[in-house]
Length: 82
Image (cartoon, rainbow, N blue to C red; front, side, top):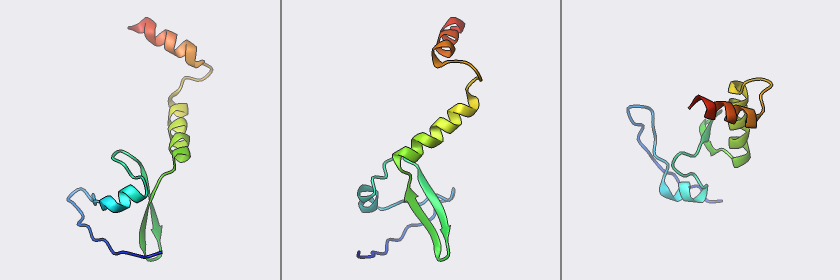
């Protein structure tokens, strides 16, 4: 594996730009989540796998979902409110 150095500036909000070549190689599209992992030599930025994305989304939904309510029941109740 060839290691190529790529430099980016940090913007005022702490944002950096990942080079197009690396975004394409690792399928990092706009809006896709990445992990920031602190390692001994710095920061590793790694794309989040689709399964991890779904796992995190389902955890967030589960926290907000009313207990003991089926999805069908919740949708029906939501439609009645409109």
